[in-house]
Length: 342
Image 1 (cartoon, rainbow, N blue to C red):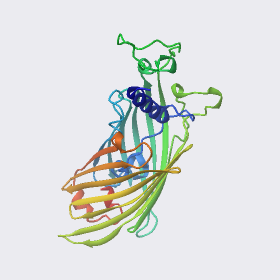
Image 2 (cartoon, one colour):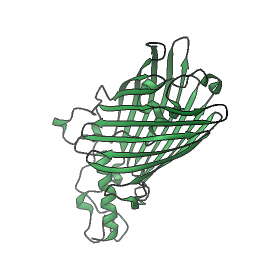
Image 3 (tube, rainbow, N blue to C red):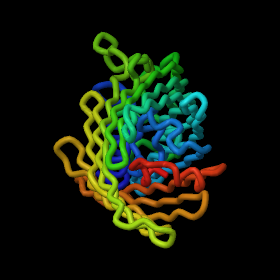
Image 4 (cartoon, one colour):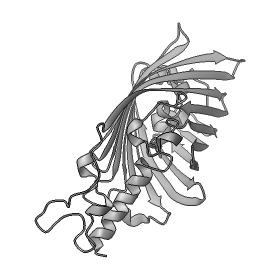
């Protein structure tokens, strides 16, 4: 088997795992810097910063896996704001997921609402709901089937054209659907706990159906998360905060757990995380960033520990947050444990 065919089969196999698994659904993106795209994790975070907030994130997973597949890229953009008179937060989120350089694309536009209830003097409960419009499509002309792969030359003939296939082109290569999610969040000045559920209406993603008789829609994705905040020092000159946290994701047979901590000293923060996927050690995640005025920027690198190896380029994330209005003035009146999220 030639090196080209080995690389091609590895890239295509990874795409099959991500997009056309035996459970017949496209797994939702899970960010390493999940706290930098909090609305994606739990709609209960809507309006968390009280002042208007923009969050942006870019993720590039396995960029070196094969040049013809261009890795797996995800873009996220969100805006949310809290309204005191309504004791509620409203937000909007845009997300685009591109697997294989356009081979499999998903675009989501979501509206979010969150309500905050004060249980006692320093204990709060937030509830949120997400209503999203999702469109998924794939490029049939770029798919390669087994009968197109020559044992020596691969899927491309000496003339530069793909070998023909006996597979029939489907009538539909895209689908749109309504997706509903919800979440709860409890917090006080010392720790927070939350749970969210996406796809609670189990929407039908028809183009990914493998076996129609056993397909019951996109499985519910559960996320359990929590953390504590240790204020080691806080004054006008010095801020020193340690924020250990965890994230657990469960969707059908997919399972992932992130454990780690972030440390902030004045305007600089850094973090180290360990990610486990079912029975396999997946990655170590290193994070570095800074906060300055209304801006927050972070970069993370996933050092792959699984059999896939670091040769595929790991994963890179770049996040950017912008907090408008009187966020720094308002911040003095905020007594919670979400410094890592702001």
